[in-house]
Image (tube, rainbow, N blue to C red):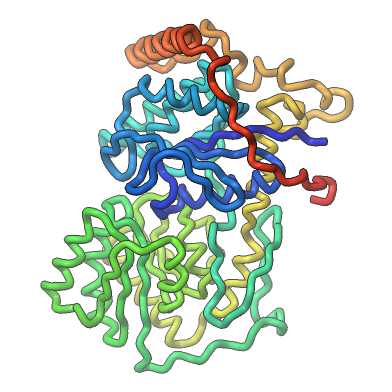
Amino acid sequence: MAPTYNIAMVSDFFYPQPGGVESHIYQLSTKLMDRGHKVIIITHAYEGRTGVRYLTNGLKVYHVPFLVIFRSATFPTVFSFFPIFRNIVLRERIDIVHGHASLSNFCHEAILHARTMGLRTVFTDHSLFGFADAASILTNKLLKFTLSDVDHVICQRKHRPSRLPRPPHGLGHPQRRCSRKLQTPLPSENPSYPPPARPLGPHDIITIVVISRLFYNKGTDLLTAAIPRILENHPNTRFIIAGSGPKSIDLEQMIEQNVLQDRVEMLGPIRHEEVRDVMVRGHIYLHPSLTEAFGTVIVEAASCGLYVVCTQVGGIPEVLPSHMTVFAKPEEDDLVAATGRAIASMRANKVRTELFHEQVREMYSWENVAVRTERVYNGICGAISEGEFYGYYEGDNANNSWSATRGRSGVQSFALIDRLKRYYGCGIWAGKLFCLCVIVDYLLFLFLELWFPREVIDVCPDWPRKKRKDLSRE
């Protein structure tokens, strides 16, 4: 029988704030719980949410009161999070600490403290960074520090989003699993597809939907410049924009200057469960992001039956098939032209958007993501061999545990001297600073073990776990 684990998901970004990282953590956690694991969430306090909360399926969330400085990220203190983190980990008997998002301070600090405590660690990256500005350079250096002493790294790949909403034509979406992206037949090759939707006439209004955080990296400046040109070129077109952020004032000023109040509707921030209701009001989804690792929202838009116009950056080109998307360079002129091509295709009824939901439903599965994540946990804990994990050993060699081969697989041991060696190689000056942080963290750990021994910390009773699924059927 496959082992089960006590897992702590740690990130600054979680509900009630909506977003792709938040959705990923929640959906992955619930699917892992369905597979028999214990999962808790550690995040910072939000307005009205402090302390311990229980979500659906018994998912426990620790909202730690910490100062938030920018975009829901907490103030980095390096060491002050350690006492409460240690208390939570010991109370919940955590085996694996899984951090999410490179811009999450809690994530980086939790991985550092978990390694000091002798826990296995996993890091999932949800972002892409270059070297064009100081923030990106510092983030890359911070990642070098964290990834020097982590058991495994997961880069966000294709997965079914949290809500594949019911499409406008009313078809349901029963749960299905798929191990990889399927080749969906064209409508002409499969007569069982639904009949075409009502054709758009030349004077019918086409609604373009935008749901995004209104920040620079989400392409809000591009959107602000492109909207007046798109509306001028296409009279029977209107926009619905949902989201909040510092760039919302620029959009509002653009609407005032161009007198577009009757053609651009600003909804402001919307709740997670309202996303579907906004999307099905439109025909086209516009995603002008300047950097994106995946872009869950464009999968949600396609699932709602929207034709997607998006910038060709990061991992976006790999998310949806070409017949669902129109790509543009992250430039104003190209974005306007791409949106124009999408509007022309919709008016010519060349795009069968009523088929998108069924096709997307076959492409993505959260259950499959949980299976692959569980395989990572089995690998770093020695439940499967290194050869079985990487797939290059067969026969008797596959029975060798990772513990015997970890010297070749990356992070080997929790010994302080081995950790210092790995950190020292991170740079001439940064390496010495990293080593100093690890030494201080280790001394703080010894202090906590001495003055607040484990025996005095109460162990929390577990929420009743579901029975382990029969993995032989999967």
